[in-house]
Image 1: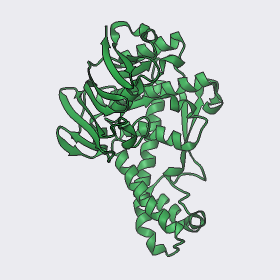
Image 2 (image 1 turned 180 degrees about the horizontal axis):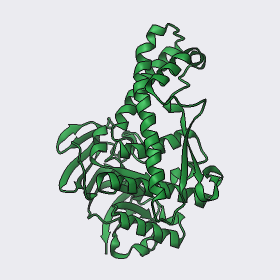
Image 3 (image 1 turned 90 degrees about the vertical axis):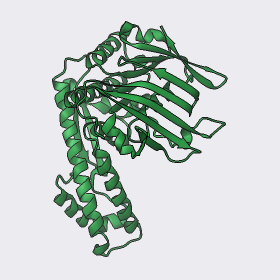
Image 4 (image 1 turned 90 degrees about the horizontal axis):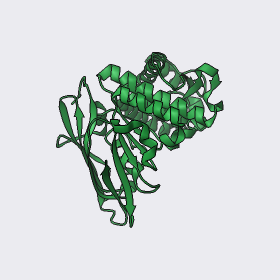
Length: 373
């Protein structure tokens, strides 16, 4: 069910039922950016979260299915939408019943979550990422893997296979099992999946650097480097398999696996100033993230003929008017359907009629949507 090369990619419709603050809501859209505006707490970010669930993973908030259900009913929730991908239209439904696991259907047929990555490409930038460069490596790995997944949908399969085998190996380590026979098969699985993970990440970083270098943009270039928290990451499957075998006794002492792609970190540098991203100002750190998202979108457009769907939560509030206008110009030049939130319509003034506007309001704890003209 691969959508193949496409000339445009956007959500034509979005329907929500008992999702977060939205008891019921529906939107009909075209390919232009979508500007969602309204007061804090009205439910704007909930709309972005809904759209993020049309891609693999746990969405922009990494919430459980139970956390997304509307209270106090807690009867479960349903999202549905029509995704336009060139001449193809995919009917997508994501639901959870009574707090249970998410269920996905594509064109009325049950599908695994990873299949969404072969149909829709969705990227996001949210306020929680503002501290990406100065907090732990886990968040940077997640950011990197989201971008890698957009280039290589099979990255999700490799991640699942690696994590499953590593959980089994960690169980043996915690039980102080030293017999090598217990480890061989698991380490073979980890090495095969882990090498694919690392190679896809490295290829993605190269794509991002090339896309930034080739762009005429108002945003700074983010130089990226992948490092290993301890030692260097083995590049080949054989090297990783050997490294896992050599590390067993050290891993038994630690009770966990200490070598592999789950220990990778992504270091960013503001290229023009040669300053590590972690030492940049808050505004510069944000600009570097915007640069990477735009580069990711440009590279994807080159690959599949269409920009991905972008989810930009409160991004306008953190940019000065010139940078804000530049961002809008770049989004429109890409032809991306970018879903953006802000507290007032004036934040999107520079978009003019290049966007569609939706007012989000809240009354007695129930969010509602209305097309603004």
